[in-house]
Image 1 (cartoon, rainbow, N blue to C red):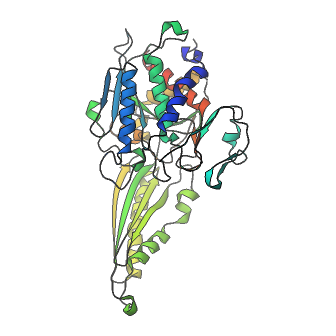
Image 2: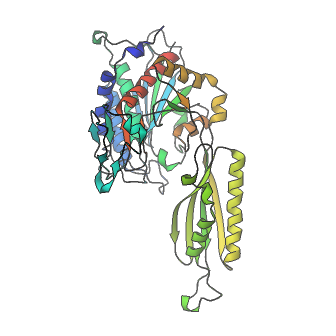
Image 3: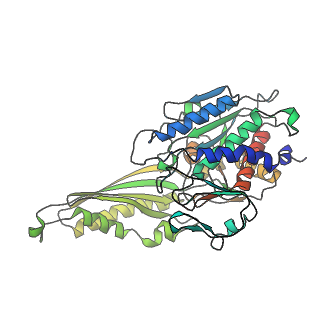
Length: 425
């Protein structure tokens, strides 16, 4: 029997998604990885409050905004579906700090002509370099103007979830569109995903979901149930200082120690040299002076044994630098950020199988791929709620060339609605 969700036209879903997305990306929600508090930036409150207000305006009665900027809302089950498991959907409201997210000017192109799109600063979206962009000819896309990122990561996911909520919450028999009966549904919007802090203040005790899905992925059909093990290293360099005019045989320059340490990280194991299941080291910040310097490094690997090798390598590099700079000290501080969610999701195979069924039912060809990064779902899975990741339709995340395919946003929204229907059966 064909799913009724297939009867929902893209035009209907598009009207629910596009205005929201164009609005959400204008909120300045760039997070700050140097801040310890949650949320790390005040701007995230603005969008969180707006979302809580929207949900309430849609007639959702159970809406809360926590002290740490998590929006939690619940749709009650349809009559007769009270005993179905509660299913959750999660997206994050912050954007990355790699490129400015202030004063975003989204550009909606309703019928993309397939040609190069010139952007600010001499940048361009070139279909000859991006086959996915070329495939959007005669379709709608939304892109950055080139002066900032777009914010599709993850405001596309937010808009898709909100569109699904509106469809379910305000459905009317007179609309001619199918009614979707469902069990309890929980909506969660989180701050600071991009900082990699791993949901430090997540209100787990308030969460009702038995299973959850993040909408934080890329091209249509991609689903993800495994991710990196992620660690962060803060390496301290303590030099030995004397007037540089009398430095021979005495000075241990902490700035040079830090840069020499960074140079020991294997270039063949960097983000730009790896893909698929290959892990990497990524130095993200270096700062200091002659006496004290610091180096921040991200370590990523799908295999826990390989991660142990990487952590041990940092200690070996520290000894090498100390030998090269007599009198200097190197202190390596490491901490985990999140772990590969594959093992926990494998324990609940129905969570992923139902996602595959949902995609089949709405006519989307799916493919499993590993996340070369992480989502809030990584940490939520570790906390006991299996949370695979679903595509959103975005491309070129964290860059000034970011864009999103509107038809794929509609497909993601339909996937959400179909999952809700399936879990309510």
